Amino acid sequence: MNDLWRGISDSARQRLTQRDYQAAGVERRIAAAGLEGGQALAAESTLREAGAWIPGVEVFHRVIHAQRQRGMFGEFARQGEGVLGRIGFWPRQWACARMFAGTCKGFHIHPPFVPEGSEPAAWFAKLFPTNREEEDFSRRLYDREQWDVMFCTQGRMEMFLVDERAGLPRRKMRFTIDGDEHRGPNTVGVVIPPGVAHAIRVEGSDDAIMVYGTSTAFDPDFEGRMASDVESASLPPEWADYFG
Image 1 (cartoon, one colour):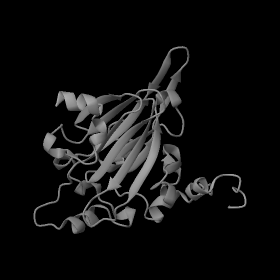
Image 2 (tube, helix red, strand yellow; image 1 turned 90 degrees about the vertical axis):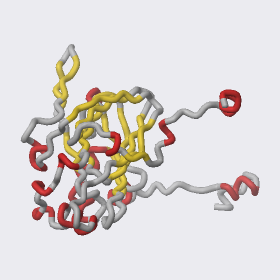
Image 3 (tube, helix red, strand yellow; image 1 turned 180 degrees about the horizontal axis):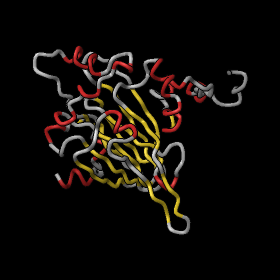
Image 4 (cartoon, one colour; image 1 turned 90 degrees about the horizontal axis):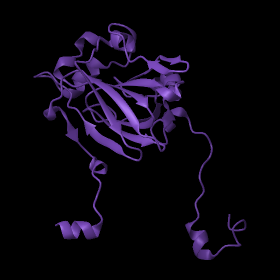
């Protein structure tokens, strides 16, 4: 490297680093640089076998119908069908949020319900067994804890997930989701369990619109903020000093 870069100053050479362009496995990329939503979904089996998939998280394709000359029609979910039907989750409240280009939300987290007399680690092991065929979705108490299902209807956004549930490995997932106007493999919906911290960052120069359903009605007690200062635009130092 020194021979290659001998035409620049010693101080500059000491600062040089090189990026590794070799393709890492999906189990490393999902927790680091991230994947596209469609890539994460396509590699779900591999990621689960590698222990890189967060238990309870679901990623699923959305159906976007092109309506030529007029626009498009995008479906969210049909009650009793698809992924939400399989896991027995139907939102009690729906909401919509617009995020300006260059902005972020989170990280925030919802508290998982643990029955009295149960240890969190043992309870989560029962809810999310290693063998997925043994999962019993009737054990999930959706009315006692906030589960989210999120969709991006406009723009592009990057989602970050971190499993913070007691007794479970601290897994991380990072992937991008496309809005309806970019219909394709990355137009996906995402189910987020309580106890999994989540954040969203708008990708690109367009605003993003997200629609989300929750298993419980909004309750401030169910929302814990962590690493969320990015949501507050800081004032210039001179303004802050004058404003007090």
